[in-house]
Image 1 (spheres, rainbow, N blue to C red):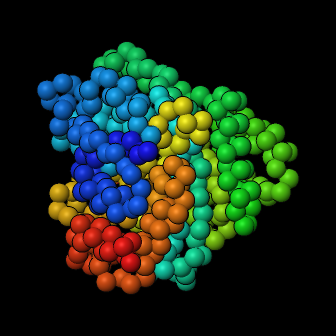
Image 2: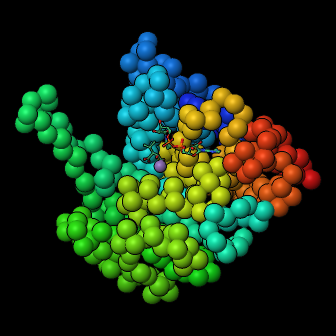
Image 3: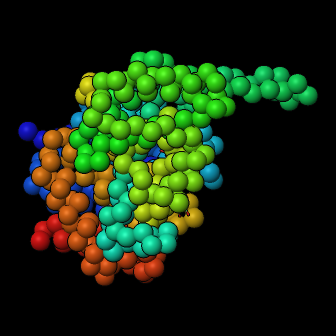
Length: 349
Ligand code: NAD
Ligand code: IPM
Ligand code: MN
């Protein structure tokens, strides 16, 4: 049997980092059957879209999708370029977005006096509703009465299932602590509801300690006291914002992998770095591919290839500790592909 994997490199540094992640997967003792989809913002000028109309149908038969990044402002409006990403999350009901942030040995932390291993958290982000629903509209466009409305929509089913996933994640970890990100002092419907669902679900997990935390305070605490976090659960937008902070405190955007999971396995799950297309460095071999490589480890975890997942993480650890091959974000002058090659070398022992 082989796993059917869709490679969707996308825009900017996406193809550069997916090439390296692909190399790493090819070096594992597992049969993968790869199909490349070269959909990106370049399609916009001729088609008015950044992927063919039937892209979800075409991705449906795969076990997993490895995405690079979407977005190229020179070629397509950003909200159209990233539409396939959001459509995969919603259309494939990938309701859990897992975003770990681990400070590895050999990586410079921008925070004072924080050592390797002292940041080890995972953000569980709700990935299908909340602030990212398509409800709303623009009215009276071009008139003095112009208005825009974007509705936040939280369902009990959607909120409860992400809370349960976060509690289950916390239960499996040593510290068994969950921080729930809220803003119930100001958002008196959505976030008061979020807190209420948290309290309801918490009853089933007496072995997990819970603290609600306001999102503004959480942004501060990610920087001031990152050691306090174990598992963090947040709504779609809060989770998005906090995971850029989480990435940067463990070395930068080049270190943060992620998984967009449909736990029922009715639909394919999708794996991608947290970072975007990084237009400021794209096309020059400067991108750090570690975020994409760590996303392949998460893919292996999801496929049940736990040994391979551990091997990839061990190779990344070895590569980082040794520190000989470094992209510019780590103060080096090595290329994206040199980093990929070095990780593959470590993998092959
Ligand atoms: P970004 O994540 O692309 O870049 C932010 C900063 O991090 C930049 O300075 C960039 O050079 C750096 N960076 C990112 N990835 C890196 C890597 N692998 N190695 C080294 N440095 C890296 O965010 P942005 O600039 O706000 O967005 C650029 C485009 O990407 C936009 O079109 C945005 O909509 C899109 N975007 C897409 C995704 C996605 O596809 N998942 C995620 C975020 C942003
Ligand atoms: C992310 C990105 C996306 C998001 C964008 C590209 C729509 O920032 O995956 O973190 O907001 O979810
Ligand atoms: Mn983001």
